[in-house]
Amino acid sequence: VMKNNEEYAGCTVHYVNEYIDGGDTILQKSIRVDYGETPWQLGGRIFREENRLLVEAIIILKERE
Image (cartoon, rainbow, N blue to C red):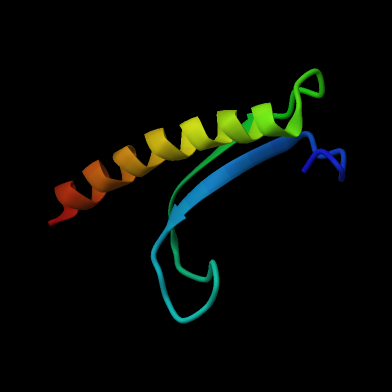
């Protein structure tokens, strides 16, 4: 992301199918890249968002049952 000078990074929770990252999206989150931080720090921020998003996705899927 930083090597490509992207403005945003993010994560996605999706259904699994036979294709890599090919399932329908359940939730998605993007965050603005801060070039004052290291790639490791950016990865940490993304990881925290992934954790939140996964919990939200589980709640959504439980409500659909």
